[in-house]
Amino acid sequence: MIGRSDKQGRVNALVVEDSPPMRKMIVFALSRIRELSVTEADDGVDALRRIASTKFDIIITDINMPILDGLKLVKRLRADKAYKDVPIIIITTEGAEEDRQRALALGANAYITKPIQAPQVIKLVRETLGLLDGG
Image 1 (cartoon, rainbow, N blue to C red):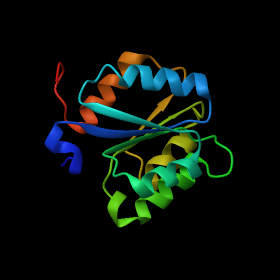
Image 2: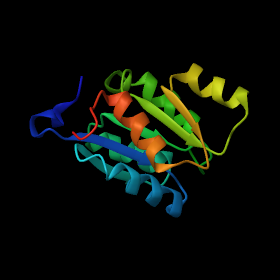
Image 3: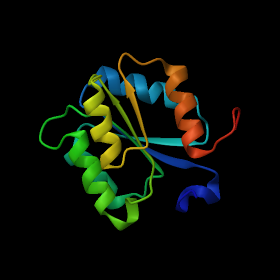
């Protein structure tokens, strides 16, 4: 179920990544999904600020970030009634199986390790949101 933005046929996505080049790459990949409206946050604290004023339909986050990391962000979101069921995708350099298991146990829906390919991200976001190819 898509949030309040569905009247315009738009889906709100939040990309949380502290590395500007990586964030730009993810945002560029997501820009190919025309139903998606993308907002950027540069760390977990910035993400919480943005979440306070906008309802997002999907969140894509890194794990390794200063102040509030991605795992703590997932935990906070899953404790929030408004974000209990919102899909969360982790994109990270942390490739260890225990990191993956921990993220999924905290409530992440999917886990991708870097380096990432744009088509992989696009496909996963489309599948997660139930969007068909081509809109």
